[in-house]
Length: 194
Image (cartoon, rainbow, N blue to C red; front, side):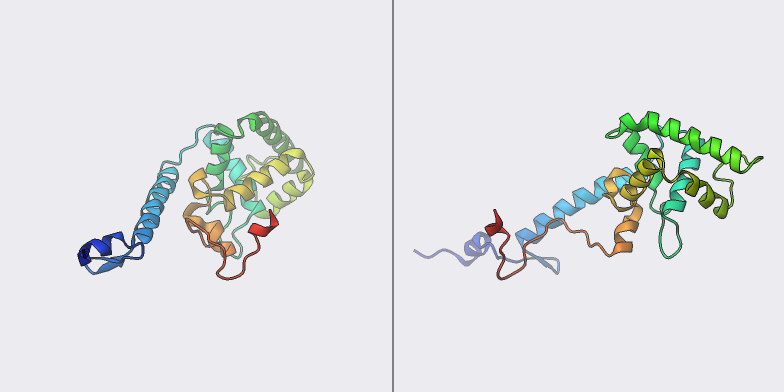
C-alpha cells in the first residue's frame, strides 16, 4: 500500500508550506503566532499607558530625577523609554508597598530643593546642573536607591511592564529579543552540570 504524496507532506515535521509566495513550516508558523500575541500585549501596555498612582505633578518630578539618572546623552534615556510609566505601574502592582517610601522620599527631595535653591518651584524646573547637584546631595538615601533601581528596571525591563518603550533600552545595549533561545549547536555541557 502506498501513501499519496500530499499525505506524506502533511505528516512530515520539516514540511514547508507555500501560501501566496510565503514559505514557512509549522514551527515557524507557531513561533510567529506566539510573537504576534506577545507584541500585541506590549503595544496595548504602552498605548494605554496612563498614570494610575502618581498624579501629573509627582510624575513630572520623578521623571526629572529619572532623566538625570539615565540621561539622553549618547542614546535614549529614561524619558524616551517611558520609565515613569513603569514606576507608576510598579507602585500600582508588584511594588505597591513602596508607595509610602516614594511619598517620604519625594518630600525629602522637595525639602532639599527648597533649601539648596530658594525660590525654585519644582525639581523639573531646575536647570540640569542644579538637578544633578540635588541628586548628589541625596544619592546616599534609601529612596534614591529605590528610584535608581526602578529607573534601571524601567529602562531595561520587558516593555509589557510599561517601560522600555519601543525597546529603547534593549536596542541601546544590543539585546536581541526572541521568543525562544536554544543551546548552541554541537557540544553543550549545560545538561551535565545538574
